Length: 203
Image (cartoon, rainbow, N blue to C red; front, side, top):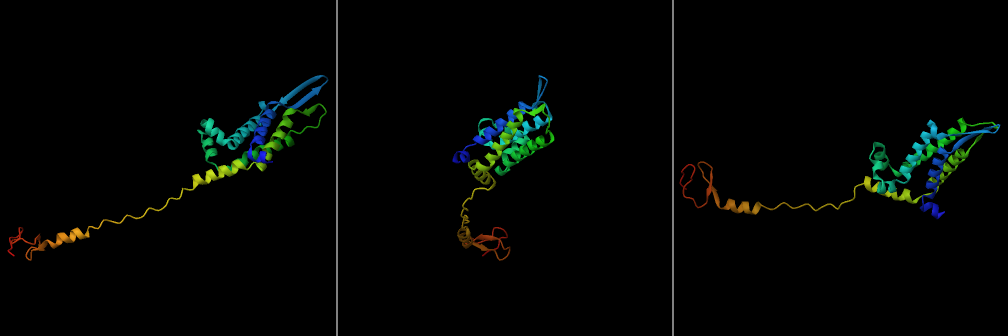
């Protein structure tokens, strides 16, 4: 059980089986020695499953893709997946499960000549593995959640002490002590001056 919690082996098996289920025969028809197989690869159902496989791969193996193939996140969709909350990775899994259930219901057959092929069973085995991965795998969810929170929340910085303004009052007082006002023009002159240089008033 610990192996499933720490490794993404179920996710790898599930994605591989989904792809195999898409390219291998989903239906096999046989009559009087004539046999014919139908795979989903050539139809729109197969295209949707491939798209869901890509989404699951980008969500589940986001860290590996960012390290080795970062170009996959250059598109608008890739950037949304890169910045998405890791808890949203369950959405592609739910979508692929719902779509395989839809295929099973709407493409159900009741004929001795038309039977389900390897693709049908591979798809179901793949979604069982993906669901198992979602239930058991915990390591990536916890790591990515911490990384996501660290990106969303700025690191706490210790407030810097306020710088005390320089005390310029003392030099200004010293300058004022060496000055005096002229009683006639109110101009500030040197305290030792005998005459005001502005109006000529004699002290």
